[in-house]
Amino acid sequence: MTEATPHAPRPLDILLGVYTLFAGCALFFPHRTAAWPLLAAAHLLFAAALFRVPPVRGALRAFARRFPRTADFIAEWYPLILLVALYRELEPLNHAVFGGAYFDDLIRAWEGRIFGGQPSHAWGRSMPVLALSEVLHTAYISYYFAIYVPSIVVWVRRPREDFRILVFTIMATFVAHYVFFIFFPVQGPRYLYPSPEGGIEAGLVYRLVHRVLETGSAQGAAFPSSHVGATVAIAIAIGRIHRVAGWLLGLLAVGVAAGAVYGGFHYALDVAIGAALGILVAIASPHLHARLERAVRGRPAAVP
Picture 1 (cartoon, rainbow, N blue to C red):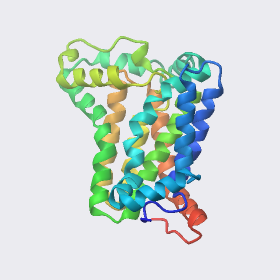
Picture 2: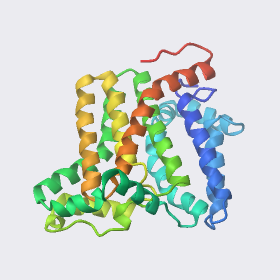
Picture 3: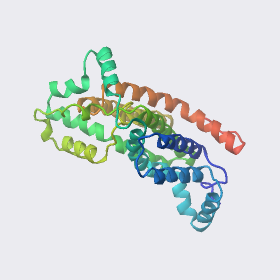
């Protein structure tokens, strides 16, 4: 048995196991997809693997003995590998609960009272400057690199525990956002307003971002903004390891937030709550990781 495939689940396994079972509760609501038995079975099997339930535990042990290096890699990287699948199931899950109803009217009402208008609808239209648009759209799409590039660097250059706490922080942030997406779905302004144009639609990055969103976004996954929340949380987590890199990622998070509103992808309230949630999760994650580590190992675990 390798270190990465222990008899007991690790903190990250517990986190995702609890989320998997909780998210699966959406399949008991009346508007569930016709394929819900398969989706429910996948949730149960995944949770069984995460909690090391027999006979799944025996299969995991056998695989680890036969392919130790592969098992070690999968055990460390599976959350980030499965991130797309976890995201794509959000739409059928929130549809199961609410049948295609969303809370945009409520968010827009709050937006109007707090900001005196609809920044996500007005900003890009009031400043259709191609150079500004391309910079902000580039910042917005760089969110995807902010997840994986720091993770790869930490995996290669830092102790394994640093990598585990970073991935735990990333996944805890997404889990916190995904619970909102399932049980408080908001479409976001992209579904309700036309995209800002005025010449900026000719931009290469503008077109790339819209193509990515059209092919891969999950409806109902706008509030709070996981783009902003995850980037903020990663910046804080990396800042504990390397201060300069943390500040650079923090600046990137500001760009992601600005691009989200300028491009009409998120309400300003999505961005504000997403940033706050990212900060809270990033602060709490090392302590929660240490507590779970002590609980499952029966030994002290240091908080960085």
